[in-house]
Image (tube, rainbow, N blue to C red; front, top):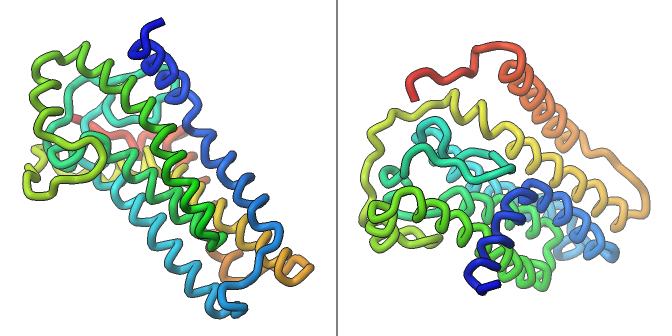
Length: 246
């Protein structure tokens, strides 16, 4: 098998199972935190670090939300079985970067990885993330090139893959759809909160020797779950989150 075909095959396989990557990531982080200590031996300092981690992950969520809010139906989705694209997105955030959702995923996961405040885990995560998603991006771009031909090649020639080129931003013709964001991003939102809650409680247990449920973390988790459950119910059982005309 030619290397190009092998990359595309591997990318399609990884694309299908990419949703399970965060679960593996949390398990590996828990292993790395077996000898966890508070940053600077200060629980207050550790809380400040957790806030920074939250900001990094929510930057990723913001990038994803901005992308999803301006994209039409059957593009930029969470589909796992196969590549789907009814049209080629070239405006909005897609005018400055070809893979904004994977850029958003990077920051979402980076914030979680930072939670254990181990430089080595961050150093390992960055190249591993690139190797993992490089195959997915290769397969995705092969699909888009085959479907859209010269239009895709022209767009790819002027638009970087993962590091945005802000000076060439072109406004999207579609208005921002908050419903579209709520409909498609509630799972990622709760995944970040749940992952950080697990690591917070695990870290406290390792540092103190006993489990202590922090009131504010419990409030964040419960709020996140209520939002997740409510949005999932509205999506599955009602038409309130249906987006018309995209």
